[in-house]
Image (cartoon, rainbow, N blue to C red; front, side, top):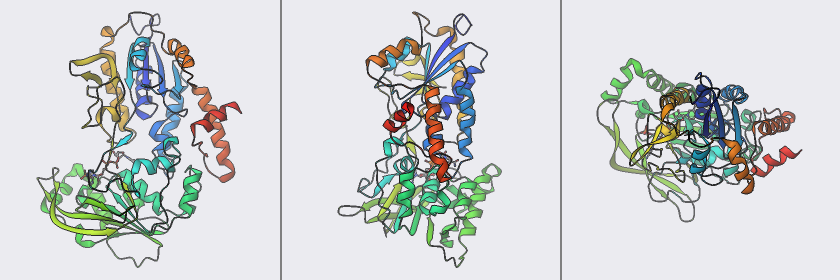
Length: 457
Ligand code: NAP
């Protein structure tokens, strides 16, 4: 039977972030005999834990210790520097495995859909986060930090990360694993005012308490709020009174602390704005200002949406980050739900117009959308693995499923320089060595060529 010692279940996992590792862990613990090959498009694993989690949040990166342990299982192989849909097709994977699971996250951004959105000076949070975290895709971007006023659209934890990195001093960042090029550019930053814009109210902000509190504890930046923005409507008061909504109640308490004038002499200020939607970005050749429309909330508690009042204001700004949520990217050979930015699925089983596609699965943000913290992905991946195990008898077991052994020759023929987990450990050690003299946990390689070169030395 499939999943026995005689006939191991061969699974390809596509994407080496949290959901991929939690799915691997669940498969390894399933009691079946499994062989898992994890494909990753970069030569370095761990997805958003490496290139999304902010450098000044090292505790969150400790999830890597768990993933490292999982990766050392003899039933696991990492195949890095291989892009599925380019270097190998989905059909080729299906031929070599009993099941293929996509855990490739949500790498693109939602759009505001307003005039001027793409003016120079207006960026996605993804670009900035990838840049300061040394992701090769964003390595060569530049951000005009000679500006004095920056705007961040959105009030979730990614906005909080972007805000902290803009607001912190070099001393607060220099012993983190922030990419060298970013630290250097930030050391020359002239940003003084950072405006964090929410379309709804303080009770609906998506920050978690710790992340919000941190914005009031920065060495050289003071948090500021107009007390008038903290007057809540009865529906918002009802939301805060709900005992399952502790996070929002605490957030509002923290905001109230920011609304007290502190006579701060700090160099930078972080202004929180509420009930305002961006309607236009203006500027001739580059961003010069943003037009915001005042909103009122409409709808019952927990379902209040922002409605424009027609009242507008213009705020001068030279740099802007859109931090309004991520969406997945389509994968050649698979149906994609453009509106939701996910792979259409039933409990992790991929489906197309004709129903479930046997042997194809997904987990994490590409399955449910970009919500939750790192740990949220564990239960989500376990659920998909349970779907897969329930399907075991229906999986295609024809032919000789050899996993990566059948695909390595194809990759070689196509000139793809794939790497394994031992190779990653060499890159890892080299990065740690590079960081040591600077008192940093690591100095990341930020180009794919550099990562591969590190393997030669
Ligand atoms: P998020 O939490 O969904 O926040 C998105 C923000 O953008 C919300 O304030 C949302 O407002 C706003 N927004 C959406 N569309 C908008 C529009 N058209 N105009 C104006 N504002 C708009 O997303 P995220 O910050 O990208 O975070 C993604 C996930 O990663 C979250 O679950 C987050 O907690 C997690 N994360 C966690 C950490 C951490 O634990 N430290 C760090 C980073 C990210 P509405 O509420 O009105 O929609």
